Amino acid sequence: MRMPRDLTGAELIRLLVKLGYRQTRQTGSHVRLTCDAPQQHHLSIPLHDPLRIGTLSAILGDVAAAQGVERDVLMERLFG
Image 1 (cartoon, one colour):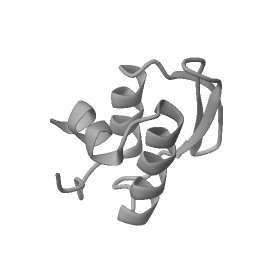
Image 2 (cartoon, one colour):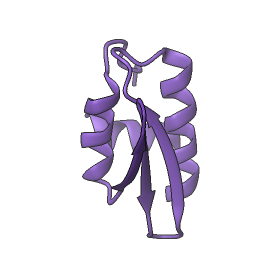
Image 3 (spheres, one colour):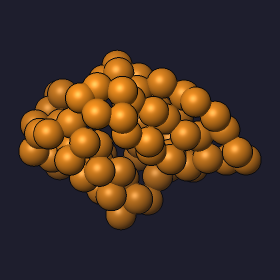
Image 4 (cartoon, helix red, strand yellow):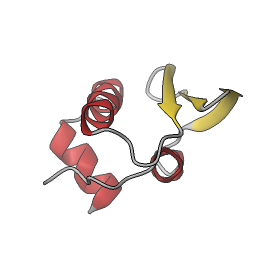
């Protein structure tokens, strides 16, 4: 699956909330998300419009590793 090129930080946060992440704090233009299952994982999302492709790729790779799934499977859950 191809990575979206026009995804904003706020849209990504809404998608990650569906996976069990919750907003724990915000400092300036960055939001910290936390997920407790399967293990505690913290993630910082910039509220940029749009997110740079490298930033989005790194975030999705980090989430996929924390969730124990492949990146393609995670992208299908989020964008499919």
